[in-house]
Image 1 (tube, rainbow, N blue to C red):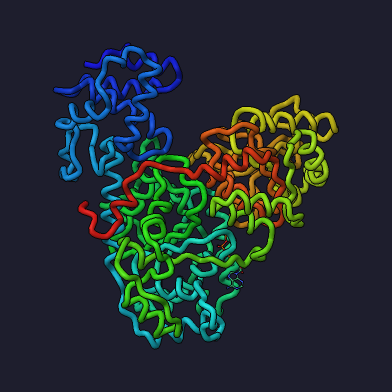
Image 2: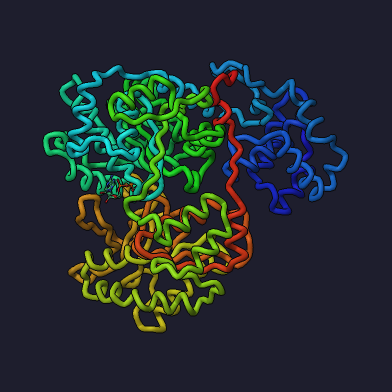
Length: 620
Ligand SMILES: Nc1ncnc2c1ncn2[C@@H]1O[C@H](COP(=O)(O)OP(=O)(O)OP(=O)(O)O)[C@@H](O)[C@H]1O
């Protein structure tokens, strides 16, 4: 049995949580042999799970092990991690154990990495479902396909330069699984609206049951809004049957109060023929697995997202891993599709693409990346900045920042005073609208500008900036923050509450109703408004400043990006990219040169075996 005292100093030092220790002790106590070794390994894997790692490689375990030994002298007598793994390996299931639920060990060793059994199970099931979906291609009448495609693209023949949106529609129409990725404004929703119209037009069935979903309420509302706009650009007869409503993923799956399981699962599949999931990069491994298990076997799945964005807040990075299985593993990403796909693209569009020399990823014939932004000029500052960050090119980023682009303002030696002055120029319109109870104008004004922070705590963190902004607004006489719910306070809900019908990410504004009673107002998906008593609003934060994590799935006319002064593990290339790409028209950047370099130089790495599992010829 594992002595509590071995892990306790690590908890005391804040390096492990009591939960990690509890799991370690539990595993140690319940293992017939090698309990001590298994307990330590379980505690380390649990620690990394909280850092969104699905599994921990033996090499990473060794690094963690060295850190642990420095903090807990009692561990000095233990053998190396390799010896621990070797000692415990009889009692750690290996990758070829069955998936039938008979596995008794809490840990699994696969591909030189250790998993908690539950997460290994998710990863294996997800891979199997993706593989099943990837096997199915539809053989369609190419002439009819070509005709319908031309109709959808306003009767125009394929242009001479390669139109990847057209290829995306074509490729996705012919397979059960498709993944369409691209940065902001590259036309993902436009493409999917055409794809859905094409599927509908080619379907033998009367009407396809199509569902639109996104991970958060905010992202679902944006998807619905973009779909309505995209439908308006389609030929009327083809647009008619397309949905205009989008659900959150949780709502779609049907939450069960107090449970982590859903109403829909493999024995009670979703009643849909085609599912579109937007902002797929935000979906974690367990939820994505549950979703794929709940799809009926005939259902098409279309994933949309930007794989350069931050991955899910919870464990795993499914969309990133899927894209990495192709883009990260090939030396020639341009030669992507197999010969059948190349021939089909040529027959319908006339484009000559180079065929892949060999298969690399199980999903390479299902992925299409859209490159061209239709929202930004390629030479706009925001778009060049986002590209430089993605490419990890700090020098290019520095050049873009100093080129006086109209859409970027860089505060290289950031002062809070400058931030308050900037906000002082735009907030008065917002507060005036709140004071005259003009709800629509207030929401419009609020979405014009948003302060985004890398961190929640610390200087330049969300909590501190909210406080400083509130103090400043009070001094200016715009707010009276004596009460929690003062007129004009913007809030963001941070928790799902199905009973109250309020969801993580919902944005509200505090304003009196016509009787002078203080309420929190929310905008509905149909554009109308509803209110709730402050006591009926679940956990929430003040919203002058929000974290970049919480801003995923939203965009703002003017994003004000604030980075801390000193490096932090949270500050990654993906975080910076996500922050920059929230800006639609203008971005103000409060960040010193050193911190920008630290962020660009730190790509986010998440322990996961999914990329390897999706490699062609992977043993399992
Ligand atoms: N091929 C195109 N030609 C001209 N305009 C286009 C084209 N594709 C998309 N657009 C326009 O670009 C804008 C963004 O398109 P869309 O909403 O489809 O992109 P998106 O990738 O879904 O954006 P987001 O990242 O915000 O989700 C829309 O105004 C759309 O009308």
